[in-house]
Image (cartoon, rainbow, N blue to C red; front, side, top):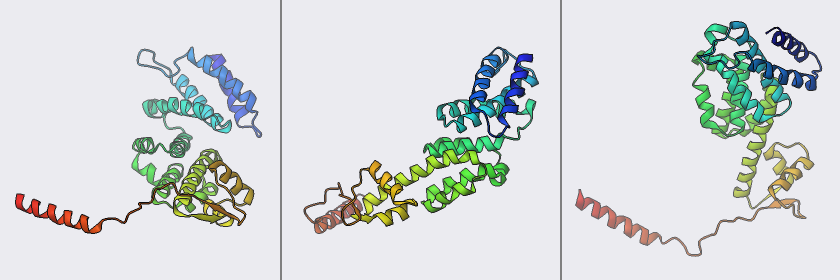
Amino acid sequence: MDNVVALYKQLRTEWTKTPVNMKLCGSLLDKLKIALVELSYLPTGDSPATQQELVIARDVLEIAVEYSVATKNIPAFERYISQLKCYYYDYKNQLGESKNKYQLLGMNLLFLLSQNRVAEFHTELELLPADIIQSNEYIRHPLALEQYLMEGRYNKIFQAKGNAPSERYNFFTDILLQTVRDEIGACLESSYERVSLQEAAKRLNLKTKDEVKEFAEKKGWKLGSDGFYHFISELVKPKDPMPSQELAEQAIFYARELEMIV
């Protein structure tokens, strides 16, 4: 246990330095994960853990979640946050509430939103108290973004990056913005026969022509000599007009038959 405490204190010290030595923190996390396995890491009913062991494991996992975001390791983030929720929900009575709890749970909500996992987003939201959902800034932020998505208010999502309650939220916000741009791009293709480079930049909330050209290249758009992106609709237009008279006669016939049955 003494070795675990020493590694834990060293990790906390290194993680609070500016700038952070990411390589050293990663090495300390690897050592701590091995050391915690020998204790009651993620304990079960058959292996009771002391409060000190639980607190250290929870704090190490909180740093691991932030470390995975800083290193842009999404699988690691998802794995660590899943383990951390055990301490937040199952052992909250023994440990008390962590000061980082809602910041990291809010980050998880934003992660789910950026992956378009809306059902899981709402499942996680239902685990939180109503007063926290309404008042906590870390929870309200991803909740507002989800509402903007549902309403199609994409301009609000583009503005949200500068209003994030934590800089660590920006990693998942950037992923969400890319998802939103892809949706806007698909709408442009379906709604317009052509769009100018300047108008595309405005709709996609991109600041430079190079950014627009990079986005267009990924989407397979071709810029014409006239400065417009031309879209070819893949929908096959009907050759014959819709037989409105025949449809009306059939509707009247069905209505009469239904009236006779009733």
